[in-house]
Length: 181
Image (cartoon, rainbow, N blue to C red; front, side):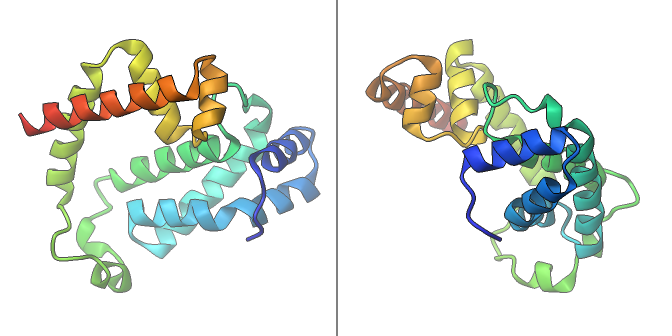
């Protein structure tokens, strides 16, 4: 995997939107390792991860023109597509946690949460995020899922970087307080 900047990946996506197969190959080479890692952590089986990767990149090929750099970073957009597909696949009744690849299961620490515990924790987290003001929710989600740097996000939201940092810290503190109450 080469190290490509968000601008380079955006340009590759624009070329893919125009049907450039060479750009699609370069995009895959530049991004697939990271996306595969995200997918594998969700589906926990190499065969299922490969299936999700195929579906994800086919979707990217077909919809690259819909990518909007004003809404997210290119990697954020592609990872979100892959995560959604991986989560959908992992939720299928015929996919069972016990069928995980042994090498992946061995690498999990004894403190790893079960899917049920993880789902409960996620629900609590989403409830706490939902208690934030809508602007702060958006800011938080863009910061963590949009993969923007603090300066990029501050520019995008048209606020000073130090105000963004303070608001994010305050939001995280409020979420922490909510989770521990």
